[in-house]
Length: 248
Image (cartoon, rainbow, N blue to C red; front, side, top):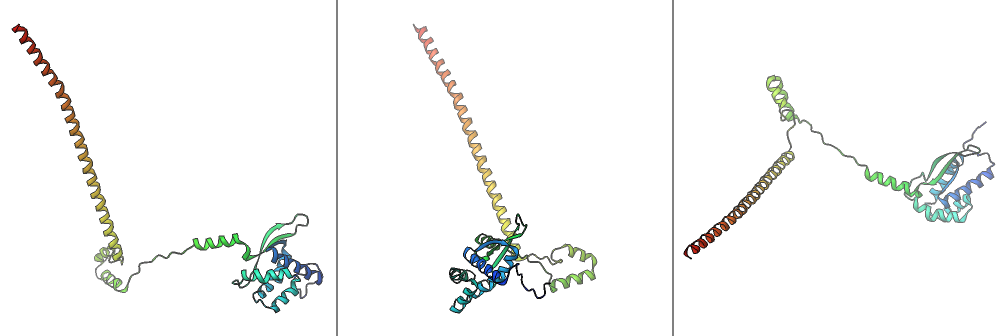
């Protein structure tokens, strides 16, 4: 029967159980993580976390109480010198139990118990996740009473006009804000500037093409005139030779 069984006896007498938990607590303080069974890890968590809370008050009384539980001077020194400074801002929950599966042989449920603030990899991942996550709120356009009243009156008096007004953005309460108007004007100016730049670029290209064509035509004309001049010179020389032969 388990009457008034408020904790796990771990199949041991009280002396054996206290000595085992003291040794496991000292090993956890020195090495920051140990591998054991899940039942022993849960019993160790209840044993060591009150001692870590007491280590935040570094006094002779607190050190003597911790030593009465741990029976290890090195572990007490490590607890009050390093661990207490590391967990100073944490309000409890100093240990973490990670399941590792079952052990070969007796199929015992194994786990890894560690001090939370000494797992640097997990702390870095959590810090990166906090930086990356963010919330964005989108503003919703709401109808004011002044805008909704004339729309309702127009809808009851003249249904045809109400349809036209409902189609228009002003009657539906979708009046553009001055920021949107300014953005539209800026975009129009940018479009006009880009169109003007494209027109000027096309004109420059057309002028360059016409200049190239005129240069080619002039070069062809010069090339055609040169053989003609040579032919005229040859004819003139042949006529002069003929005249000299007749004189002789």
